[in-house]
Image 1: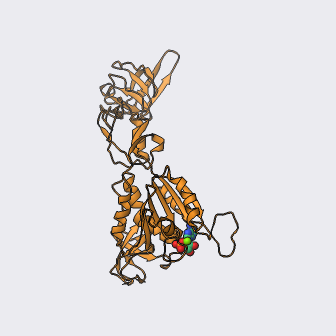
Image 2: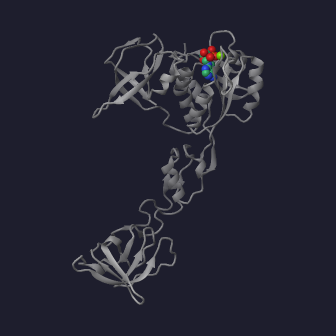
Image 3: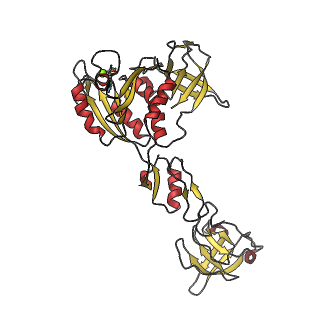
Amino acid sequence: MISVDEHRQAVTALLPVAPPVALPLADCAGLVLAEDVRAGVSLPPFDNSAMDGFAVRAEDVAGASVEHPVKLPIANDIPAGRLDVTGLEPGTAHRIMTGAPMPPGADSVVMVEDTTSSRTEDSWDVWITAATEPGTHLRHTGEDVVAGTVALTRGTVLGHAQLGLAAACGLDELRVHRPLRVVVASTGSELVVAPEPLRHGQIYESNAVMLAAAIRGLGCEVEIVRSVVDDVDEFSAALVPKLADADLLITSGGVSAGAYEVVKDALTGAGVEFRKVAIQPGGPQGFGRWHGVPVITLPGNPVSVLVSFEVFVRPALLTALGHTDVDRHRVRATLTESMNSPAGRRQFRRGFYTPTEGQVTGIVGPRGGPGSHLLAAFTQANCLIELPEGVSEVDKGDEVDVLLL
Ligand code: AMP
Ligand code: MG
């Protein structure tokens, strides 16, 4: 039997790192930046007000208080977006809004709450009721980012904050590792796609939907083929045309030791190697190339599919998408129930982890038994409990490794 780690490496090695491509910002969410990005402008690009209020010279309002307000004529009005800002004459104030450029000569802003103003036909004045220090309520040019410096480094995963920063720096597109195009295909003559009614002996197809959602969530484009019957010719007829634009084909079902193993029958000797991996669930695995396209063949049981995705597919796809952090967060936790594990295999059980307040560890209990058909239990899990190959029994109170999903 092949070890979990060896198979994981083999699957990861199948996929080259995706080449860089320039995409509009809005299409980059979740993708990985392929090159450093330098800011074309400083942030803020100009000194501006952090408050709605009045731009003044601090020395003009020294000693101002509610009891002794300082009266200044309002010489100008500066809303955000005003382009023709003039200098502030000593002994005057400019009304200014948040984000508006500071008038040269002003050194601080008094917020509107510390003022009262009055306007008549021939005068506009403000009474300042609080003193200020130079620099108060100002945002300085380049305080966040300096023009020409690296704002986002290569390898950054582009979440919403990173995309916001790129937009603020004036970028309209970014060079990212291209999203992979993955074809996901389910096999099995028993599979039916809803809303078609089920006949006795049939089941609704679920693997393709799960895999597609999981893979899209990593930033890939997915085409799904919901059900291919267990016939080698039909398998090839359905899937070979899909390979032309694909970076990867992932199949489920048809790789075990029984008869009618369509994936095994179609791909053995065609570039795909089938092997038994020391994992439970999900032992029968295959990987290789078919018509030049990387292929990963997963077993059919839905929980095997989900565990195989976590252990083999997810790290391989993340690596190919340019990620460097491809592992789930691992913590130690105390078991609330005893469990068994098959000797010689690494078992991944569905579990629910609860952190213990004030401690680095937590507690974990299984959700559902080891059966690889128990999909409902997976939906109640938030982690996988990993029991190493050498362990066949763990007791309540033992510490185990937990992978947080
Ligand atoms: P197989 O590996 O093809 O023998 O499938 C193992 C088990 O998983 C069988 O009980 C199948 O009916 C079930 N199965 C296979 N593919 C799917 C699928 N796409 N959706 C739901 N169950 C499946
Ligand atoms: Mg099958």
